Amino acid sequence: MDESIDFNKVVGHERVIDNLKRAIDNNQISHSYLFEGEESIGKRMVALSFAKTLLCKEEGLEPCNRCNSCIKFDNANHPDFKLIESKKGLISKKTIDELIKTMNIAPLESKRKIIIIDDSHDMRLEGQNGLLKTLEEPPNYVNIILITSNINNLISTILSRCQVIKFYPVENKKIEELLKINYNKTLEEANFIAHFTKGSVGRSIKLSETEDFLEKRDQIINIIDNILNGDKTNIFTARDFFLNNKDFIEEILDMMLYWFRDLAIYKTVGKSELIINIDKISLLSSQSFFSIDKINDIMERIVETKDNIQRNINYQLAIETMLLGMQEV
Ligand SMILES: [Zn+2]
Image (cartoon, rainbow, N blue to C red; front, side, top):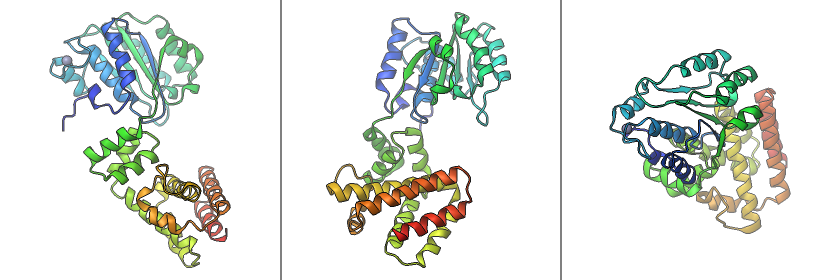
């Protein structure tokens, strides 16, 4: 597979890409951009493609992927490009200070120097203030692209210095196509994953590469079915599953929520495009004798369990409480 970075590798975001290309074409490229939107939807891939284009010797609207600059960019050793990443949730003041120093040195091989700061909300206040001075008066060869999924953590003076570009979740259809063609998923599997990640391309790919993700869904659906059928011994088997999958608990609880949400939809409107677990429709149908009240009650318990686990309440206790509660209702 061709690994070079390019706009055509991005899934969705056509409007954003068109606007960036138009800015290049009209020679109206901003010194500072802020790419804003949910995590893992493709902001970084667009930023990298844009940076590569701006550095490309051909000076077109897309990287040529052949020139020296493009090759160095793909090999992550372009001297006029710098990608700053967060380490353990922090971009330190020291990192920013060093960055500012290197920015003041003119580019070596290109007309520009491009800086991308990914997860820029991980800069603390002092780091942001440090960067602010550069954003106010950047050297004319510098272009900075800040990326964030948490715009509220950036100070307003940074926002006002940047051209903010908003990214929206990618349409499910496009993610489904990608998963079917490049990751060998069936339509139903692709449909489930795209909905499950709420339009996040990055997470969809990650889950598609996680070999037993869909297997885990089958297991958890099985467990739900057993518990709802009221056999007390099943609680212990279920508990073991949860203890063995502690690292995956957020996904598992989300899968459970989607299951009961589907059940509620099935009960109220019947077979519908809104149902995510559409490949399991017969099992949903067999559980549809549960009342909406019961379904809502179980969903509340799952949400409560998510909260409890996030607040670091004893894991096993939280799980057992949920499982017993599910059987009671
Ligand atoms: Zn090139």
